[in-house]
Image (cartoon, one colour):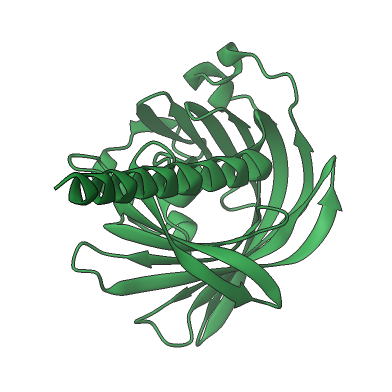
Length: 247
């Protein structure tokens, strides 16, 4: 009986250690991708079987509670702004001078007609806070040895995805591949990160390609054109008033 008890204790400790290790890997990866704060300029190319179009935008982020995204091109959409202010989500359309509060139900919809969701852009969901990570093994992605981690949505978490599978490089904690699954564990889309470059004070992927599972020929590619990490941004910057004037 004593040996059996010790066995259960060792198994329990192994499970706890694994969970802590997976959480630590995820946190290091998120910290590297986001920093404490960041300002990014990006270009998004939306590819469809019959057409292509591009959208340029700039984003400001601070921690997990604040983000703002400004569309800078094309002219038709220029000036549209999206804000995450703690638990509130807003959009501003200067053409019709209208401020709209976005419900959580819109987070799964495509942003600007792309394969990236509103949640991807506005960072409403945090994989650190809203998911339970499990280290399931190691695999090679693009020639790099990666941790393979499964993230399962926590009970009652208001999230878009039922689970996420993510591959993170062992040596540099870069997220190279991510697969998104619905509540029925069906694969919805895959994101591939590539073109690792020195941006500001760190090396990060600068190209992100989303490939939806069901829409053959559709894909969306986002390229980071410039980024500054750990910049000073006051909390007051993230406001409805600033949405109307930010450039």
